[in-house]
Image 1 (cartoon, rainbow, N blue to C red):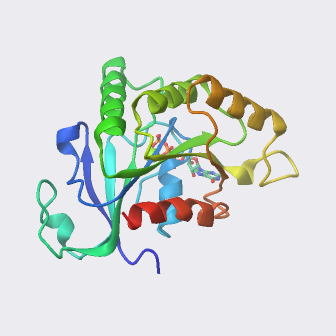
Image 2 (tube, helix red, strand yellow; image 1 turned 30 degrees about the vertical axis):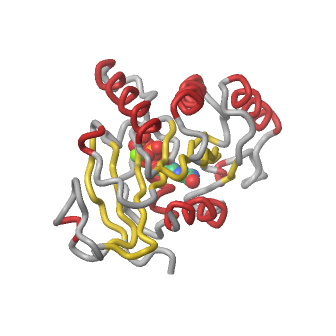
Length: 225
Ligand code: GTP
Ligand code: MG
């Protein structure tokens, strides 16, 4: 099995609060309510590892999950050095980010998250893949364009940036699992205009598990790092 164990490690609001960068890492970013936490549960085969909610603004910190860590490690060393042999060779970290665009989050908090994200993208040197989740029914919002800008300015070229179109099961009437031409067009335009260029795009649904194998092609890069 790809996921033998997965545990919540810690939540952070700044770089100092991040767990040791001691293995590969995959981050899930995107606007509030787009389905980040649900997708993390889907790829790890867990029902409620990452907390989800109908109401936007559920995730309030950068939440770090450890996949295939040895039992009990989450209670031991969260920061700094890791004891040798404390993790399996295919262990990696998953980060669930808060959605930045949510109006009810105070301005100060949003600024703090945005600053943390720039620094995180630029300096988290174990990062192997950033999944940017966008609603497959609506395409990129202004918030998504800001995220693309953030990525193009801060993310090192060695890190994979992958767009994930979410909630495909809710899609166009009579055609679940399909994306409208308009959405694809506006996505390509937004990617071009906001400096990320041509990147992989995965269509997904946490309900039907559509896109799971495609997501794992990139998660494996974190696991093998
Ligand atoms: P924040 O933590 O607020 O940033 O939100 P999030 O991006 O983590 O979204 P979350 O996973 O909490 O999902 C938001 C809502 O969308 C929940 O009601 C989910 O059940 C629903 N949802 C998520 N993914 C899917 C999907 O693939 N299909 C359908 N139909 N609903 C989904
Ligand atoms: Mg969430």
